[in-house]
Length: 234
DNA sequence: GCGACAG
DNA sequence: ATCTTGTCGC
Image (cartoon, rainbow, N blue to C red; front, side, top):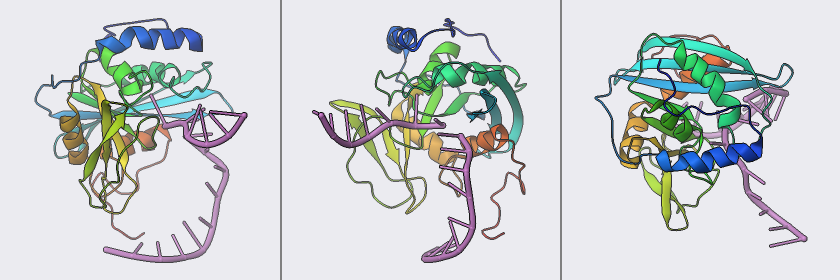
């Protein structure tokens, strides 16, 4: 897809990884700096404990109609340990490989995992965005850091995710009565824009179609019907 | 000391 | 990440 704008060594210790995050966190841009969005990518990764291999998937959907335009997978043996806050050092190398195998380049990438809603404000989505110099959004399924007030039950409602005095993300209800997701700036996008885009990529499930499709590809499961919303039964 | 801790 | 059935509700 595109060479890394800010390459760095991946063969590092967790201590060195933290230092890299501290050094790169200042490169994150939190205002909109996007092109017209015609294509949205989703990336996800799965880990196989037996083989110690990470398989990453990247998919590209047209926007706003969300039709599958491109997809790619990549595998890598990983030795970096699982450490909360250091996901990028396990998953990103494979994710970069998968993105590099795409033929259609996306205008923005939605990542599984947080952006700046991270202890050092440099989660995997921000890391990917800064590396590539591309807009990214973080969508986490569980909270890593931050607090928030009660969230209304209705789809589309959201409240800020705060850490001290900082707003680090949004708690977003993507479906009425369903557990929310945590949206945060990855790179080159404002929070409100990110929330709107995530909602625009969400059809009838909790997670945006980008994440769902990438996850399905990474986990090797076949698609049952089509990219269109399947029937409610069977 | 205790709880929390993305995938 | 993954282990895992039935069940409740639209």
